[in-house]
Length: 364
Image (cartoon, rainbow, N blue to C red; front, side, top):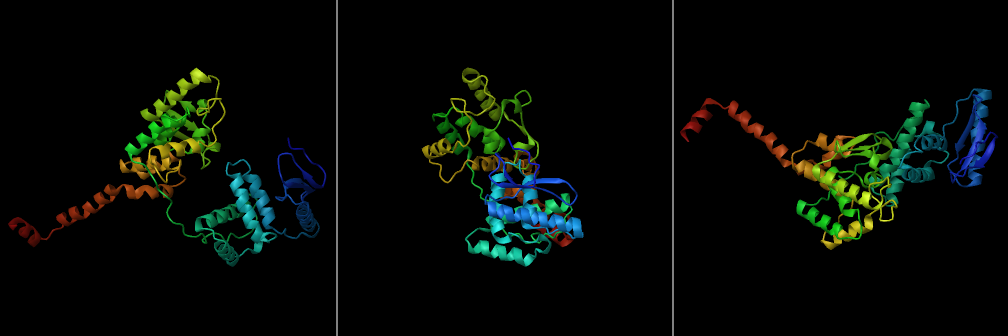
């Protein structure tokens, strides 16, 4: 458990690898926050800077310097309960190499493009650079909106173009073979896990963390809490008959083996499944399915829906995409929508045909 610190200075907490600082701000409020560094000398320098700024604000009425470190400390505290926190921390570390000590009030677009150039020279793809820029932009927008800091956001309008995301999916007969291979594996849950993914489009972590209290078999619905979804929003996932049968199979296995287990997908000893990658790849190899990842089961679900004529907006809602832009990667799988659109041109021409055109048509 973290200990409360009511004295000025640096201290360490059991729940954090970083040094923390404690001081009184210009309004007389006790501030306790992470320095974001494991190095004591760096932490001391940062705490000294904070105290100096506080003194200047209180005694001289000077506007505080909004540094990169200050911005990130506040933002990391804001996102501390997100599942993506480890990734965000990695992006912050990469950004800090370039922007450490930077006064964010004077951050310019040219500095953003210089950063982009350096990351490209280091061999990073546009998508990887964009993930780092997104964190910088999100941190700036957070302190601007919630803390009312008057700093610019030169990241806006400078994101790089990315190639369309990878779309790899299975035909129905391939999926059937994969499920059969999973049934013959030593894993008691793998086949049902694959079936659920194919018929709901749920993400792997959403399924592996699924508890029976979230499953309503009477209404054929799975309820996902906001903290469990990538978008951070509550989502209800409807179950078709195939997905429902897979969950009923899990329920029977639970009743016979681990009746008190709260999780839907567990190992034989009741321990949680964190990956399922090894068994999944083995099943793929057994039936000759190559270049196929577990996440591609989600792509397969989306592809089947789109080719069956389900509108992209409905596919978006089922998959939990934050916008239809993500779902549009599957649009090319529904050419009939576009084909119908161009038939309107034929109908329009017929309605506006000239008399000579009509006579010619009659003669022919």
